[in-house]
Amino acid sequence: MDMDYTATQSGFRQHPKMRMRNTSMDGTDPSQLFDDTSAAPGVQPAGFPGQGVGAIGYPGQTLLSDPMSNLAMAYGSSLASQGKDLVDKNLDRFLPISKLKYYFAVDTVYVGKKLGLLVFPYMHQNWEVSYQQDTPVAPRFDINAPDLYIPAMGFITYILVAGLALGTQNRFTPEILGMQASSALVWLIMEVLAVLLSLYLVTVNTDLTTIDLVAFSGYKYVGMIVGVGAGLLFGRTGYYLTLLWCCISIFVFMIRTLRLKLLSDAAAQGVLVHGARNQLRMYLTMSIAAAQPIFMYWLTYHLVR
Image (tube, rainbow, N blue to C red):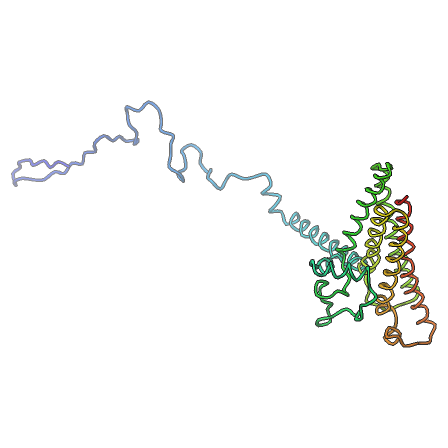
């Protein structure tokens, strides 16, 4: 800002003059050929009024903001949740999958002792399952508790031993091995279903579950493996002698285990109890135990020649 001092009659008077340098009325440089279209973020460019960052929308934004769509999604989620709960409830009624962890809670010591008990059950005295606060303890802490590890591994090992036996006789084919596995599985399912039907008809109040029956029915694979193995090593004589021992052992094991589950408390302790219902329970227990040697022979006799 420059100050002019002009001589007047009254003396010097100050005239302020404001002079802007390198500026013009429209705020642009006269020497600039093109307009500067760059702008800082948040600055709205000229010539496009009413447009901003929030004006840009997405195709699904309107659909998601629609109350009817939200209500339909909530209703669909509710139906899916109710269907899942219904399936889980009915499935857990017949096959309690949530309890499978219990049946696989085993260790090496338990497996060794259980295998010895299945092959030689005659010296075992206490057959009762241990409980802790009305809940049975895990199998690794109680040799009398049923498990699914030994039946599952026994079934797989039985199929492998059957393939080995068929191979030594030049009769092995994938189709025959698959038929062998399917046959064993079908017989196991039919046996469990027959026991469930028998328990229903006899009206036995027991804490045996379907998985318990699968476990007890699957223990016979141990004797079948031992019998076929003896047949491969010692011929048919070794097979029959070993299988006979294993059949007697599994019969004793099933009788002593199931009598605590199916018979009344007095009858389970060896006291003679009269009554038609108790006799039916005794016959059912003996029938389940007697079925094990029959299945053992039926599924193995053709593997040894």
